[in-house]
Image 1 (spheres, rainbow, N blue to C red):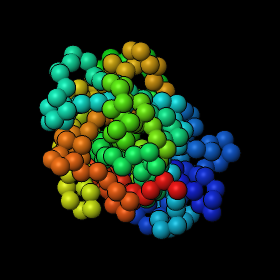
Image 2 (spheres, rainbow, N blue to C red):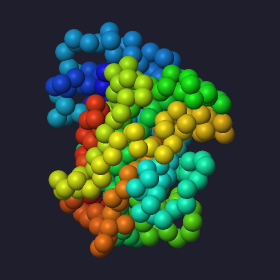
Image 3 (spheres, one colour):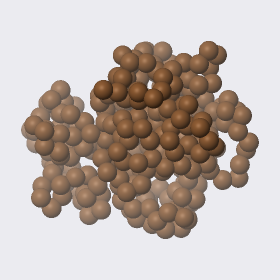
Image 4 (cartoon, rainbow, N blue to C red):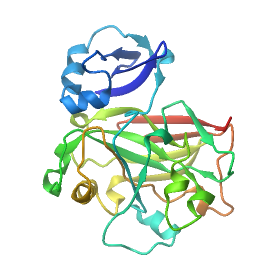
Length: 280
């Protein structure tokens, strides 16, 4: 099942994505997808709605980030060997971790915003996990059970601000730079441990391509590690890392510019597509 957050007639909603449209599943007691995950009713409500007429066609549904206001967006750095090498980072025994804020996010087909303070906006295609079951100190063996679903993420980076210091936070949190979507494919549709392919395209040209078998720290390891110091809650988002091929490490560098189209495709999930625009 594909579950998404969107607006219909300027009203925020969530629901089931069909081949032709969306079916609104929001109601007063379950106003958003995060609440549905917290109550554990996201799949049952979606199953009940299967076969119902679309509430709106896809063309008129304005997609929001899959989880518009997660409690936590936890991002992993240098989790593919090719990217670790191109950034000249040392090998580490544990994942590199940083955080995004919810207000930095944008949905599928929304504008990816180049801030006025920089022209060094870089793409970073990634696979995102959405947590469905809460947990603390989760063993790797049971980590999959805590995943609600999978999505695509463009952890776009404002490189000169990222490189102000050794910390990533400024370059990762400008408004409109974290694209998330278009929807979440529920865990039941993707076998635990199944290899997923990730591809990033800029104006149709493939810039990054990898799969989850290449992760330095696999998904169960990430969940076990993160849940040791962060209690994970339904709706939390884990962004698992970007492969090699980022624009900053090309010769010459490739920066996104207004009008560019960037796509992040994850096998069995779909294509997250955004157009870059200058900050208004």
